[in-house]
Every structure is written in C-alpha cells, then in structure tokens.
Image (cartoon, rainbow, N blue to C red; front, top):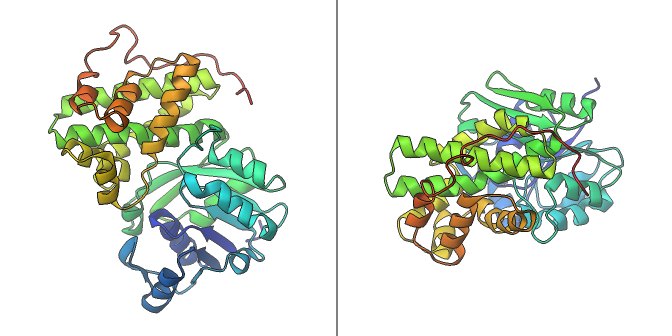
Amino acid sequence: MVAPQKIAVLGGGTFGTAIANMIATNGRNVVLWMRDEENVERCRQTRENHLYLPGYQLHENLQVSSDLHGSLKGAEVIFFSVPSSAFRTLAKDARQYIAPEAMVISTAKGIEANTFKLMSEILEEELPETRVGVISGPNLAKEIVNRAITATVIASDDERLCKEVQVLLGSPYFRVYANRDRFGVELAGALKNIYGIAAGMGAAMKMGQNTTSVLITRSLAEMSRFAAKLGANPMTFLGLSGVGDLFVTCTSPLSRNYQIGFALGEGLTLDQAVAKVGQVAEGVNTTKIIKQEAEELGIYMPLVSALYETMFNKKPVSEVLSSLMLAEQSTDVEFTAGECHERDV
C-alpha cells in the first residue's frame, strides 16, 4: 500500500487534536485545521492547544492552519472532527477543495437534527465521489494523549480505507479494529452519549455501583431495541463501539456527557451545565432527536423519555433514577438480537 502524502484533520477540539498528533507522531505529513485564527497562532507559537489539550506538546510534523483550502489541497485522507451541528456546513464548505476518491472519515458521535442523518450519511450526500468511513469507540482524548492503552473501530465497506486508517493511527498503545457495519457502529456512538448524561446525574446524587450496573444494562437494552428497529445489526452493540463505548461514557468523569449529567445532578439548569462544561456534549441534542424518533416508531425507551423531561421540561433529576425501577420487568433489561434488515432510506 502506498502511503498517502498528506492527511488533514478538520476540527481542533480534543479528539481532532489528539488524532492529528498521533498521525504526526507516526511520521506522516498532517495538517490540523481549525476556524479560530487566534488559537491557530497560539498553537504555532507554544506548540500546544491550550484551549482543549493544555500541557500536551504538539509534534513537529503537525502543521496548524485556519486556511481550509490550503489544509485540504492534496489531502488524500481527511478526518472530520467537528460537532454534528457544524458537520454539514463544513462538508459543504470543503467540497470544492476535496479531490474525488479521497478518503473521508467522521469521528463525530451525533445525529443531525430534523433529518435524522448520521455524519457518514451527510458525507455521502455532500461529497458523493469520496470514500467514507467512521471512527468510533471508547476513546477519551485525554487518555489517548497520555498513551493509555486504547482501542477504536474504523467502520466502512471500503477495505482499503479501513487498512489505511489502521496504518495511520495504529501504535503500541492505540489499536484500530475494522468493522463493516458502519451504520451500527455510528449509531452506537451517538446513542451512548444519552446514557452518559444519566450516569453523570446518578453519580452526582451518589448512587451506588449496583445502580450503575442496572443503568448500563438498561441503557444497552434500549440501544439494542432502537438499533434493531432501524435495521442495524444489534450484535454490533456488544462490541467495542457499543458496550465498550457505553461503559466508558457512563463511568468516566472525562466524558463531556457525564460531566453535563453530573452538573445537572448537582442542581444546575441545562444551560448552566453546558456553560460549566464549556464544550459540546452531543448527548443533549441526541436525547431530543431520539425521543422524537422513538415516539414516531413506537420504540420503548423509558430512560430517554425521563432524561428528556429532566433536561427540557425541568422535571426533578430523581425522576430519571426512579425510572430505573418503574418499568416493565419482562423486557426492560432484555438485549434485542433479532433479525437484521436493511435500513429504510
């Protein structure tokens, strides 16, 4: 396999910075693009992204730029690492600069409001000639930069794309597994953020480990019901991008969604919690989107419903926790592994 001459990472947040630096450390020519020109200049001068990964030295191979055209010119592999709310706009802006047959990979774990599109589907719509993949898994950026042993999933039908990403990111501390179920992997990454918020609430209210285990089991059951209804392979949810990512999001204070939930559990309003965390937590909007979709499709998701009422209708946080017990005993923790069908589009 011929190594790509240039890689671009679009988005200078925690994860975008972390993977760009990993690629640079592996000896590749990589550009990290971000909109904030002031932060670009600070990164160049200090060789640190103080806003998102303070104290983490940027590799000398890593270039930082606010010039989208220059960042994408000649890039053969492009990672989109921006929040879901900005994803389509960036894809539209980047379209004229991306070469046909380029490999484009989403690292965002969210769903577009109104369209219910996953990020890879947006890439297919806006960049129809490119080859599309998704990265998802239990990947806390601050642990990655500290070289904690980590694994992720690259999901795509394109075998060459999967192999290329495995080479670009693989290292003794970062393992990349390939999976062909792009839809299931990406859906799992979006759904788990909802339950990270619920777990953070519970932690603030000092719920015990028994309760946490019930929450994680109930969450996996809800996720699998939703996935099966939409045509994803529910067995994907038992893997790294499903239960693996769910576990870390529901147990780690480094998770932004967990942090939002913890702040809510301390009595803050949603706006106050978001302001306190200071970064986008995809689970907030995903909760709203999934509640609406679940109601339209008739999918039983009591945790999502309770969390929605707490965040958007100011119901007491205790209602989310009490919903752990007030539910159908026969199906509430039952993992769905029914027949997988193609998703309707």
